[in-house]
Every structure is written in C-alpha cells, then in structure tokens.
Length: 185
Image (cartoon, rainbow, N blue to C red):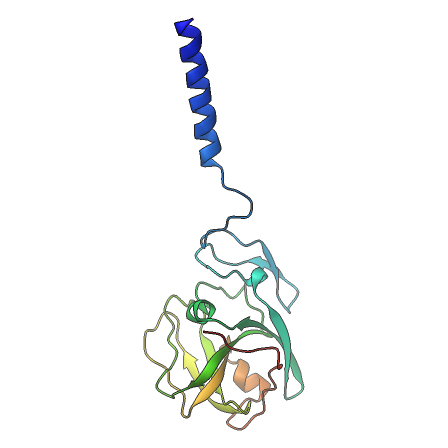
C-alpha cells in the first residue's frame, strides 16, 4: 500500500508541475512573438520578440499627405509612445507605413525624440495641434541624441528616412489626423 501511495503522489506531483509550466492563452508577455503583420507594401512580416506592443495589435488609420495615402499605427498612450519604432526592421515597416504619436497635451519643443533601440533611420515630423508640420528631424539608428521640435507640438509622425521628402512634407504642410486619434496619459 505504501508503494502504491508513493507512486500516486509522484504522479500527482508530476501532473501539477506540468500544469504549472503551461501559460493560459489569454496571458501575454511583452516578449512574445506577435504573428504576421501586413505592411502597405503587401509583405507579411513578424515584428521583433523584444516589442511590448506588437504591430498586429495596434490600431491603424489611413492618412493622406499631399495626395499620398499612408497607413499609420496609432501610439496613443505613454507605453506605446515610449516604445515607438524600437526593434522594428525594414521588413516590418513598408515605405508607406508610419507611426502617429498622439499626446494628451501640447508638448514643449524641448521634449524631443531619441532613437534608443531603434534600428531604422527615421524621419521624425513634429506636428502642431492645428495639424501642420513644424519640422522634421532625421533620427540615426540607436542614437541617444535628443531631437527636438522647433515649436510646441501635439503629434509626431515617424516614417522611414526619406519619406518626408518623398511625400513633400515641409513646415506648414497639413497632415490631417483623424479625429479618432487622441492621446491618453
């Protein structure tokens, strides 16, 4: 009887160990793979394992700038704004893809952007509350230099380097951001 009890106890212990090692489907860690992402260029890619906010999980909206339609991921809260385009590669982001950063309040020019953990060279366009481009900074990969705006701003558009010139974005260019895009703390 003692031998049978020990075998049963060991079996139950092993079952509990195995059950404890499995994660529930509704749990998600910030380092899990996100699955396929479809860029506006038609390719399907998978973003980095290092990301907390995976592209497939972010809201996307279309924006038309000077007759060019682009798709932007909405970065509307502090966590999303902090991560931005970190860890994304050229295959994750098409030429007509970008990120729109929406802030709940107008930001002072000194609150610039930096390129920590950002692999792609980027055009960083600061946009006023009236949806006009203020200035564009060029971010170099993994550079920690503060890239400031030249005036207070409420939105920032990030795209691959060269996109601002290709789309004709310069100071005063209207960048119509949908009213559904609002910044949250």
